Image (cartoon, rainbow, N blue to C red; front, side, top):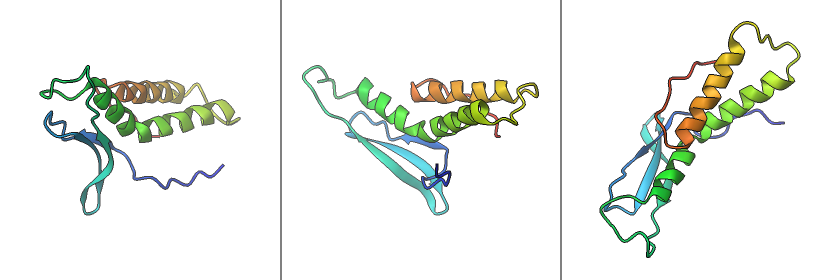
Length: 119
């Protein structure tokens, strides 16, 4: 397995949730300023004729994309916890890994971001 990270580093966040703009941006901080990581386009349907709000599906897609680096880090930590024979579950790191995974899932589902602990 290649462990080299090639994606834009976290944190990623959502910007420009203007109801009149059909694009929601997922941004990340870069050396030159904020960088657009993804653009989530709104698709108008018969059910979504209210142009004064961003559709729930658009918000959910943007939240999921913005949580991708956190979800990857959580999955990698959980896998290491499960496969590393030297992992010590008695030093509090297991609980920290589980809290970070819960925070990443919460962010992906559109909940408030929780402060996570670094490895």
